[in-house]
Amino acid sequence: MSPDTFREPPFLLTFLEPQNLVKMTWTPKNVDSARASCAADEKTRLLAQYKDMQALRRCRQSSTVLPPVTLSDEPGTWSYDTMNSRLRNDILKRTFAENKEFLETHPECLRRLQALDAEMAKSLTSPLQYLPENEESEKEARGNNAYAVDVESADVRFWNSSILAHWVEVGATWATAPWLIAELFFYRRIAYAFRHFTTRYDPFEKQKLAGLRGCAPMLTRFGESLGRMHGAAGSASNDPLVFKAGLRSAVLGALQGNAADLSLWPCSHQEAEDEIGPETSASSTMGEDQEDASRLLCDDFEAFFKDVQTLVASGVSAETRDGATRHRTAFIFVDNAGSEVLADMWLACVLLEYDVVDKVVFYVKQYPIFVSDAMPKDFELTYDWIQRQATPERPSVVALADLWRSYVESGKWEVKAHTYFCMPFEYSDMPSKLFEELRDSAAVVISKGDANYRHILGDRAWSFQTPFSEVAQYMPCPLLALRKLKGTIACGIPAEKEKYAQETDKCWMVNGKWGVIHYYTPHQQTGTATSKHDKSNCTAAIKSAATVCAT
Image (cartoon, rainbow, N blue to C red; front, side, top):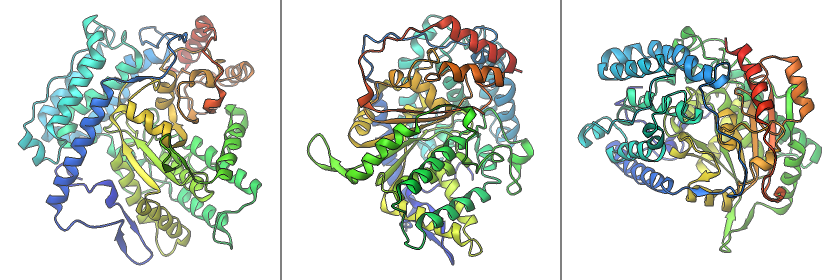
């Protein structure tokens, strides 16, 4: 899609019914009018988000003893290899190659990307720099279906004043600034290079589309599972054993879906160029819902299921603090687009069909980061792909697509984007409105993937044996974290599990083959965190894995 092409807003998604293509809700008679209305709403929403982030709510107890944040200046660590090698040699190199045509016709974007490449070539000594002020006029921005100029200006000011100021003033480099800040700023610089706020161009879109290739069998399996779930009665079984097995299968499938991460295991250049074909490197592991138990380093599913049973027994509505009736919602902090989103959709479907919740909100990123992280338009791309699979020859997929379309039309599924998820904050520091939304509406937050996990832990060197309930005690609602390990930040792993992983797989912390199912609920709180953080042992384990696997 051309950057100048009007992309319909998320509520205009389409699905394929057995005989014809239909719009989800309505088709605007005046596209220009619809665009102007959506742009105005988007501007208001985004500016409100930046304002709310100016004074983050500090949710963690001030007396909590915290381990240090992770830096990228120690050779032999995974963070060092990421910031001083992988980002430039893998991700930037691939970004140049896969966007060659765009860069040839946008020389200013090429110049900006080359400037970033030059900085990353000397990341140990290149100091962080402020983002340049917005250069586009309001007229040019509107002509390109861009974000409002006020939005980009707000983003630049926020990065410069609230995130970068301290580190620029002390002369921090890409390697000596906190890893999470430096890595997320790297992706913000890519967005700046491609003038994303003006063009809405996603330099990673080819990879995301290729990530869906080969997922048709996975979609068919979900359709067949839906048929078995409903059976002759046409609704989900009341058998508690069937319910538990179905939910566990969906949770494990969502965990396995997190094995796809295009920033670490991209599709080949040819796969990214092809529109159709067999499975790709990002989809070849998809569709398995039986996780190898020996590679599950923590499994809190039983605790989660116990609370789920309580939710189902108590019904689907409750009262807010003000006494008003509100529906209970599952919030999914989405990680990767493509095949992982499909697995997340199936988990959301299971939660709704078994009446665990009556609404699911998918929280996604506002602009492109971490290559494959999902944005609102990636859900549109996924829906478009689903509709192409829903043919009369595949009735189970048609039934699944119809059901999922009904979720969107009825408001049971909602996709939201928040700029907060593109920022390098620990989730203990949260915008007040987001915190209140989770506190008042969340039956559970389901956090997916490595980046969200790093945010939960503050990218800190917690002892691997620190209980997850201690780390996440600031959350105002139940939290289920599903993560395949792709980095050296972790907690809640029993010592015997850690020992087994070290002896079994020298790359266990970074190869995406080992996973955790963590669960926290506020009634687990026992007071202030007091665990001792044995940095020496933790650092030794991290260096041991990273040194071997960096190559």
